[in-house]
Image 1 (spheres, rainbow, N blue to C red):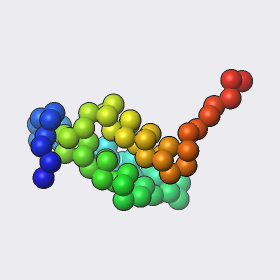
Image 2 (cartoon, rainbow, N blue to C red; image 1 turned 120 degrees about the vertical axis):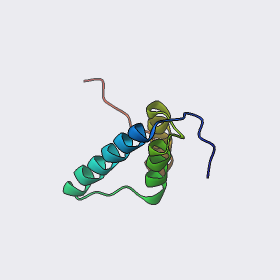
Image 3 (spheres, one colour; image 1 turned 180 degrees about the vertical axis):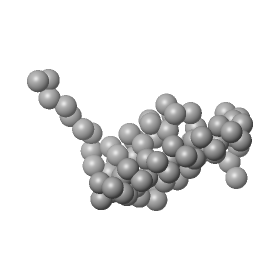
Length: 75
């Protein structure tokens, strides 16, 4: 098990776990499902190994590696 750099309470861990399960349910309703690497990143957040910002950055990095950078139009 990895070292927890951001200790969280069991209550916070449960809240994060519930958020994760709700996000998964939402994705499934849209016919989507995160891959194994993304699920591992989400689990590290639930376990308190990552902050929300770090989790987002890791997911962005994963997506850029898999599909390339996303460019938004200026319009």
